Amino acid sequence: MQVIGSRPRLVVSADGTGVVGHAGARLLADLADVTGLTGAYSTVLRSLRPRGTGHDPGRIAADLAVMLADGGETITDLAALRDQSEVFGTVASTPTAWRLLAAIDEGGLARLRTARAQAREVAWLQAAESGGGIPAARAGGRALPGLVLDIDATLVACHSEKEQAAATYKGGFGYHPLLCFLANTGEALAGRLRPGNAGANTAADHISVLDDALAQLPDTHRYGIPILIRTDSAGSAKAFLHHLRNLRLRGMNIGFSVGAAVTADVRRAIRSLPEQVWHPALDQDGSLRDGAEVAELTGLVDLAGYPAGTRIIVRREQPHPGAQLSLFDQDEGMRHQVFLTDTPYSSGGSIQHLEVRHRGHATVEDHIRCGKTTGFGRFPSRQFAVNAVWLELALAAIDLLAWTRTLLLDGDLATAEPKRLRYRLLHVAARLTRGGRRLRLRISATWPWRNDLATAFHRLAALPRPAG
Image (cartoon, rainbow, N blue to C red):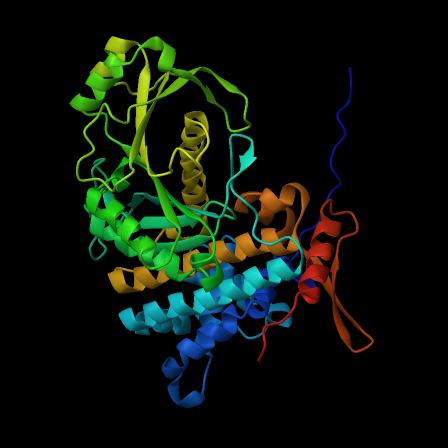
């Protein structure tokens, strides 16, 4: 019989000194300063500071973003920063933070977005000067040119009566925000809070969110490189696609890849296709995808009213267990998905590449899932305006995590989701010591990821600072 060793016995008390929890969150707070986010927030919210006294409203907003990036869920979670003032400085009280959120009106919300765009430009310049730059999105084993923007909506349940919360199409109750993420880095470019009964395929909402997202891009990227817009079938409205086409007249190199409904015309076209025009589909690593094929339907389906050059492509695949199939799919024994793109024949590669590129839009679901653990999975107020500001700060928190991965980390941590970053880096404990007129943050010598965190702090210190 083998005896299982017991753990060392402990005596627990709550009287420790010089010990810091969530020490890695200081990395986020410093990054907000180094990218200019804190300063930009201070500038745009200066009018909310009463007679120049009290807490700086911009610093409060930045602290809220840091708290959300660190995994906090409510305003009271600011205590994790506030009660460790030796590391995080003076942090506002919960009532003060509440008053700031309530004081930011629609104009203030727009100014917060502008401040975040300014910080993004600095972060991207820092990435370029550090040698890496903004990484390319990938599909089918190859890098995609330029930037890829993914737009999608999600449902957020509300368990109490909140202003403009409403019944959702899935039978729940809450909000239905529409969001735009940058596939290259996972940054949250834009988001609009909407009632739970807002339409999924509303062209006006897609246009608003896209315009907000494009405003977040530095001019050199907005006008200088290709931008691909990906959505599911909710973004296939003709008004939205024509808006994208009109943006080209303003000097933006914008293309689209959007899902489309399998209509009666599409079903007839699919059934008319000879077997020899179907080609093997690809997986995201570039290998052939078992049981999946793609074909082009352009010329077989009426695309009147869509922008000139729109193409329509279909994928058929053996349905996986539990897949929801239409009657057409059940009759054919295959699951069919269709999308529209304006990538021309001459520059877009094979239809297999276009299809696997479009299927990469599914990564937006991961970004939304992570975003719900970074602030917008739970809204704090009964007031819609306060919750809209909370959503904007959650997007800033997602950006801070994305900039941390891009600027400060490498290896598997450079692609890690927030949950892993928090477990390995942000929530680490450390000891504070003083010596040589310096305050030192000492990470445990036995912590497995101590060198990753220390290296991140060193890289942060070496980043070029914005002028002024």
